[in-house]
Image 1: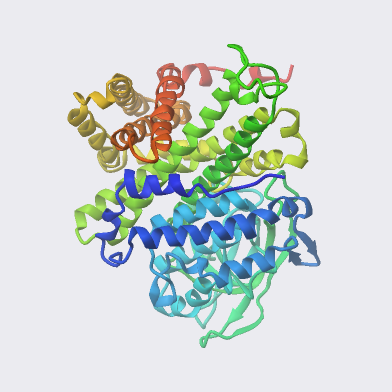
Image 2 (image 1 turned 60 degrees about the horizontal axis):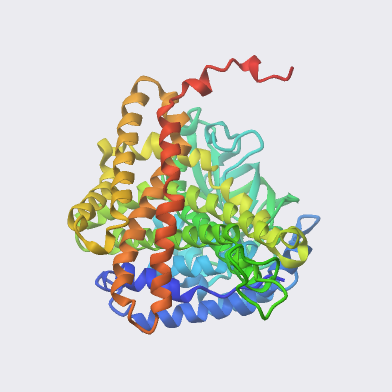
Length: 597
């Protein structure tokens, strides 16, 4: 059975050494966010994850959710775990105190979310969707709707969902058919069917608040005619009292490859009463308040799965004895050496470690800027921070989830046959991780969004938030002896990314297929270059501390940075070659040439 230990030391390194917690503490409303407070919160979160959520992860996968005549029951232990989650105040961590929240920074909430996802990804989806629904209503709801619904959502008594997808449309939401008919009392009657709805029905909360995309009778065609509606499972009156069922039914649940403890539902709405959220015909743009949060959350899922997979692979590699080291026996007291001595096993483990720690630095970096974008007193500082968050959201969603699946598969490989069987729990990580590359917009869609929207936005303004600090870093540290072995590779990576960016900007103006053909490779190239920037910064932090009591930890940072720079960053050369090859090798192929023959 798999185990999990929250990586508190590495989280602390990211938040408090690499990124400097004082930058968060300096923000309005964060004056009490001290190192001791953050450590205490994360220590308690670790206890919840290690002692309550992780022990029901594998059993939840085995049992799954059950459906009976519209009623969905979560696996054994989930209700009790959810109650512990609520009682501990975890649902209110980064929520507005006006509605009962604790008002803590997003950066604290996001690292907590990584631990929850690592310990039990299926469970994480229930509060995770509610968190996104909270952000959506808090951003676009009227004061009356916020006062009526948010306190119970913040408390965790009510949960939330996002209802977008229909059987005939997923990414292209302009094709959706769900209808919303206006009534004289300013409500709407919503009718339609939505599929793939995470947490659409379950037995954890007293009410479920659905946010539904639908079309009013006079709406224009396409995406410009889509509006957003709040539709509760049980009606809630103006005093906040829960009433009768509201025409919302779970028609079935999906039988999935992974995340079996999470109810993925087909939801039918039959004249279900709801409220318009935001302006008419602005539903998709309003929904992005929730979707962007969920995309960052999916990044946390990828990182969480990757972390727990690495931990279990490492433990196995230290314990499993098989063969002798190629350079001579390393453990003569044992019948064979632990497989950790073998170069290929180390290659796999170091790949996992480098991606995980790099992705944690990336996630914490963007979380810090998310806080700045919400709280900074200076308008320009808020704008610059938001630009970086906007730029990096598709990168975090796609790259961290790609790494989650890649790392989970490497972990299986480390265990060999034992990784493939259910007993050890590794195969569940791969199955659970796979969905993160698909939902909240497939990773191919994230790449298209990245090159098609984020790069050209505001005449390239978003891009400056990475290139300017990267180039300033090069100028400041080009003669720093600490970075001598890393700097030529870092400079080359940044230059290569600049060249690829210039090529894409020019080529896609002539032929939009050029951007589409290069998008996935370009996003990964960008992510690897950002990792190189963060690993260089990590080396600068670690080197002066090599004589401390934690010398092994800090030496590990430098050694992992070296592995990343020499073994993983070189992927950039082939990615760059793919980008420069253009769209012709893809688009010149005739449809009939694909077969079948």
